[in-house]
Image 1: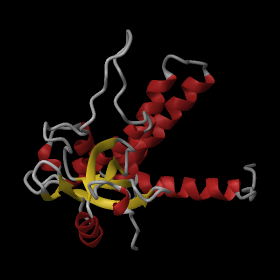
Image 2: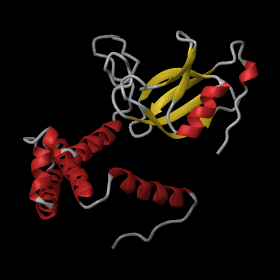
Image 3: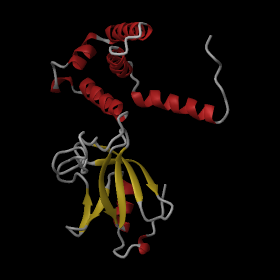
Image 4: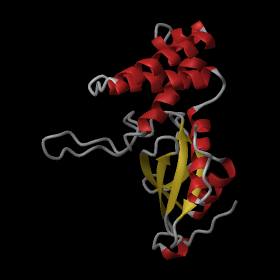
Length: 223
């Protein structure tokens, strides 16, 4: 789909673009499109900017191999800024960090990274998928060993962690409950991958249900 940008609005004909990790929501970097870079990004599905320092088109990752695969492009209402949702193939920053943005220390506590806390689930799911696809990279990891034991054992672990979570909840063990719930979520993500599904598919179902409820349609209440 073609999107229109008003390059004539900008004195240098460059439109700023914020790149965000499509899975975690983390802001990765800021770049600039000229008309040619914008067209190439849409045509090739990889983020290509105009480099102000090099004065040429620059595909992110052309040297490192850490490309940014476009998931979706969003033009703002004034047609002079772009939000790029992308899937990074590795660290985005040239320093080897995930994001080009650093947290600024403020007050007595360290500043949080520029990513929603819930995004950790997407990062964990991505790591689990990597362990499944490349077990040789970390042969001794717990996740790799789980995949080696097979679907039945993984499903059993989910059941065990679910029971332990319920026990702590019913017993009012507020100190232990978060840990048991974390174990349950982790093993559930492993189970989804082992069964050929993923966190994204589960979230798509939840999103559809939420939209149904928002539209005024209620699901039957459980018995």
